[in-house]
Image (cartoon, rainbow, N blue to C red; front, side, top):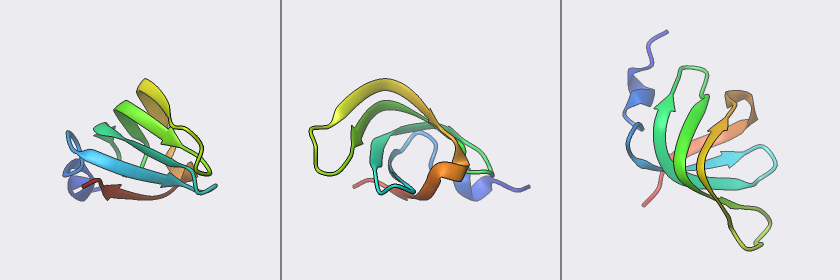
Length: 71
């Protein structure tokens, strides 16, 4: 599988929305063709609650609704 499109996200600030409408924001460290993604300096936001912060995080691609560059 060619994942050249996905590698453009590496090293960039991204927003990852998962299937339950929760959202992760952080810096993408690695991503593969299955949309498995590793993030650093992550904030996790769910249902408008106070964000939780993680130094690093891995999200399995099957849980991801979409990934976008964060502005």
